[in-house]
Image 1: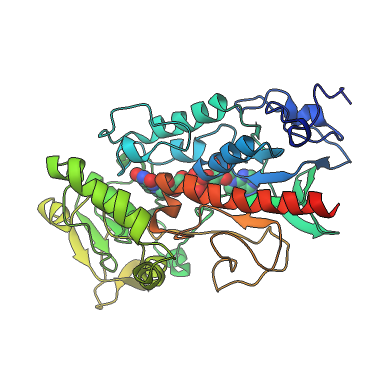
Image 2 (image 1 turned 120 degrees about the horizontal axis):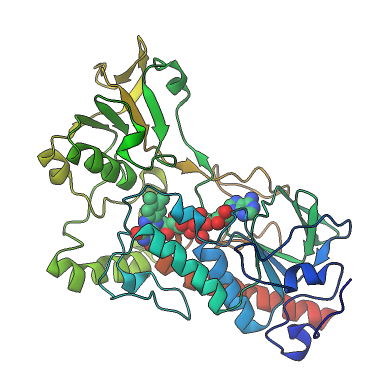
Length: 408
Ligand SMILES: Cc1cc2nc3c(=O)[nH]c(=O)nc-3n(C[C@H](O)[C@H](O)[C@H](O)COP(=O)(O)OP(=O)(O)OC[C@H]3O[C@@H](n4cnc5c(N)ncnc54)[C@H](O)[C@@H]3O)c2cc1C
C-alpha cells in the first residue's frame, strides 16, 4: 500500500484528502477524475470510505460537490468510461429543453448565455469540467453490480472490487431498462424497430413509414425529426398535455421559462405542497407535459396522432381503435424503468421504486436515492433540481456522520 499523503479531511479539515486510510487508498486518491484516471484493480480487502455515491451524472456529481464542501470522505463510482457519456449517447440532434440558466450545478454556472439551449454534448462536457473543477473523486468504468448490508455497513461490489461504507447514495438515473412491450417480438422481422434510447438519427431506420409508440417529449422530438425529413409518421399514445408557450420565443425565453421551469417545476410542484402531491402520481404514471414540440407542430408536418398500440396482427402494429398500420419502422418512445434488482437490501417498495422520503430510505439507514422522477419536485430529475436534492441528502448524511462520531 502506498503511504497516505495526508490524514482524512473529516479529521483534519484537509479538503484534498477524501478517503480513510485503508487498503488501496492510492487507487482512489490518485488521479481523481475520470477519463482513464482510475485504474480498477482486483483486491480482496474492501476499500473503506464514509460515503459511496453510485453514478456520476448531474445528481451524483452534485452529491459529491456537497460532500466535499462538508469534508466528508467519499468516492463516486460510474459505469461509463467517461463522465457525461449518458448525455453523449442520446440522439444526435438533441438540444436541451432547458436554457443554460437552468443547466448549471451548485457552485458553477453553465458556461453559455443564459438563454441558449445547449446541445447534449455541451451538457456532457459541462459535467466533465464540473467534476474536474471541484476535483471530485470519480472512478469511471466501474459498474456496480450489488449493494448489500453487513453488520450495519454497506458493501458495494463492482466485479472484483469492493467498497465498504456506512452510507450509500444511489444516483444512477432512471434510464436503466428500456420499456418495450412483449408483443414487439411478434412484429414482422422486416420491420426495423428500436427504442428511443438507441435512436441516434433517421439514418438508422429503413425506408418507409414510421410508427412512433409513445407521445411524450422523446416521442414528439423523434417524430418531428423524422417527419421534417419527409417521412410519413404516425404517433401513438396518450396525450400528456403541453406547456402553452414556445420556450424559444421571446416571451418564452424571457418570462415563461422562468415561470414554468424555474418557479412551477422547482418551487410549486414539490412533495411539500398540496398541488405538488396531487400532481405527482399523474406525472409518475404518464410523464410530464410536452415542452418544446407542440401538437400543432407535429400536425403541420403531417404526423398523424393515433391511439395506443395494443398488439400485433399479422406482424403489423395493431391500435386500440382496431386499426392495423402497415409501417416499415417502429420507434419505441415508451420510456425506461429503473433497475433496482442489484440493491440487495430489504426495503419496501411502492410498486415501482423503493419507498423513500425526499430520497431518504427509512428501512435502510444510510441508504439514499437522488435523481428519481419527482423525488421531491418535478425538477428532481432535471438538471436544476439536482443541487437542492443533493444538498438535502448530504445534510442527512452529515447528521448521521456526526451522530456516529458522538456515539463512538
Ligand atoms: C432525451 C432526454 C432529454 C432531456 N433533456 C433535459 C433537459 O433539457 N433539461 C433537463 O434539466 N433535463 C433533461 N433531461 C432529464 C435529466 O436531466 C437527465 O435524464 C439526466 O441525465 C439525469 O441525471 P442523473 O444524474 O440523475 O442520471 P444519469 O445522467 O442517467 O446518470 C446516472 C449515472 O449513473 C451511472 N450508473 C447507472 N447505473 C450504475 C451502476 N450500477 N454502477 C455504476 N454506475 C451506474 C451511469 O453510468 C450514469 O453516468 C432529459 C432526459 C432525456 C432522456
